[in-house]
Structures are given as structure tokens and as C-alpha cells.
Image (cartoon, helix red, strand yellow):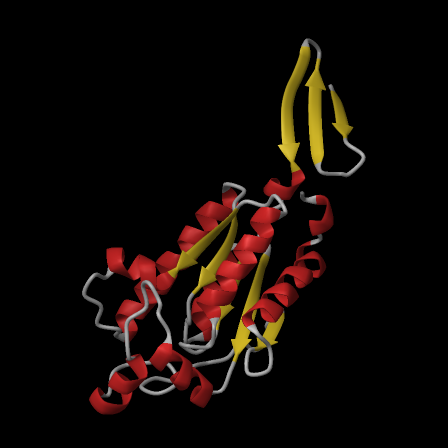
Length: 214
């Protein structure tokens, strides 16, 4: 058997007696999982979508797990209780693990107000990183009031204040990552600037040269 690596280190061909057997694309088999966390309204979904677009243009297979979308299936009438959050975030972490093991790069778009939720995913996936989308509560409240999200519930901060709804940062505490691999402050960065920073940090984190994945 012979192994042939092309000059760009992008493809590996494996040959045995009788001919060609397998071709592997290094850009797809070296998978990773990034968890985008931050207060509701900080810009997680917008930045996640921009990062996905950039990476797809570079030839990477990327799937976004957006919790607000997934909730519509697993908790169509959510109560946002602590017990429900425990189940939902454990399910999310396991979904990411299965995709990761299939060689698919994963972006988790979810607040995950407790560090333990994100730590579970870290324990399940070796190539894992947290991306902290940082913004003040005041900025997040202002953005959430005017955002047009496809899946996110509307006016959550107003409900948290008036109805004492369970919203991270107001109704329940939000625990910022203790040691996030990537931090972008969207109070001073645009969504496009933040997305570029995340993409540039991927090489440092996972050793994949995105310049060769085209």
C-alpha cells in the first residue's frame, strides 16, 4: 500500500495492490466544534452565519446547530426551567459529538447560561473551542428589541422584566466562559469584523491551514 499526499497537503490518496482505494480531504476529516456563547442579542447567530459562509467558500463542510431552531422540535412548548435546560443542552452537545465524529465541522449557536453545559460538549469532543460573543446587557437589550430573528422568541427581555421570565442575564444568571479560546467584543466590532477574527483563529486552535482549503 502507498500513501500519496498532494503538494498542498489538501488531499491524501491511498493505493493498494490493484489500484486506487480511498481519497481523503484533510479539510473535512479534521473536524472541530465551536460553541458560540453570549447573552441573547449579543450577535451569536449573525456572526455564526457569517463564519459559516466564509468557511464554505474555503471548501469546509460546516453545520450550525442553532438552539432556537432545535427547541421547536424537542421542546415545542418550552418552559425554560433548569431541568429542561439540562436536557436541552445535553442533547445539543451530543448532536454536536455525532456530527463531529462524522467529520463535519460544527458551530453551536446557543447561549448556554451555565459553564457546565459547555463543559459537557468539551468533554465529548477533543477538537473543541468556546467563542465568547461579548456585549453589555444594555447593548443586548437594545439589539434584541429590533432584531428580526427567524427562530428566536420575540421581546424576551421585556418579558423578563415585566413577567419575570427566565432569561439569561435578567431572570437567571449567565456564566461567561472562564477560559474561552476566542473572544470578540461586539460593542466595538462589527459582525463582519468579528467573523473574520473567528475564522483567523481557527488555524491557531485546530492546526488547519484555511488558505489551502479552497
